[in-house]
Image 1 (cartoon, rainbow, N blue to C red):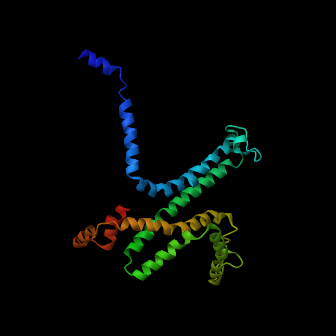
Image 2: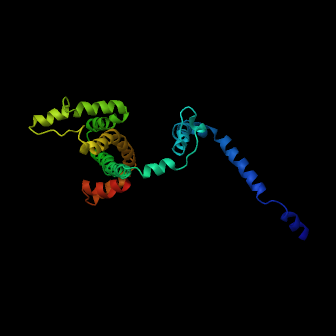
Image 3: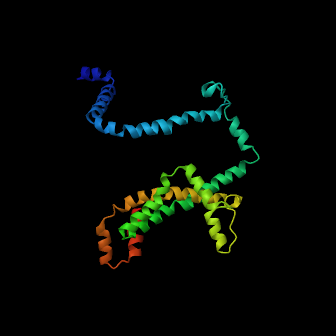
Length: 236
């Protein structure tokens, strides 16, 4: 018995399980190769277009010289960051970035949820499909075309919205030239383009609500607003 324990004591205990674990992993991969082939396009997309460009982040720590490229440019460490933090406009830039981010979050987060809840309550099929198409169609418009549409709508001289406001006897603001309107124009143009796509995601979540919950709530006398508040919103 003592000899047996001595023999096992000198044996690497983790070697065998690790080897078996590796073999088991490859065996599972080969058995489910169709699933890995199915997910390969999405994996390659993120690898090439999302993680691949992160290679260029090192430019921030180098004195980049185009003729030498990224790898040939000398390292400067945090010199660029130190110079930026001590620049005259640092606090203005920081405030603009934070304020625009918070503004976008405050406006862009609830609007898709509100639209999804509203569309979910529409019973007219044609109107529901038309409204959904109108809201998420801007998502497929390129940024260049979107900018051209905004200029067409809000131009001080030829803008449609500008002429409508002036037609009502009011003075139209300078949407495209007044700095005070920049954040609003930036945030709402982004919401206009992306809110419809977010609405589809929330509508998909609402489609998974158990109809029995609404039936039970109706039997208990709950109004449509109460069902919206206590069933649909918690699901989202």
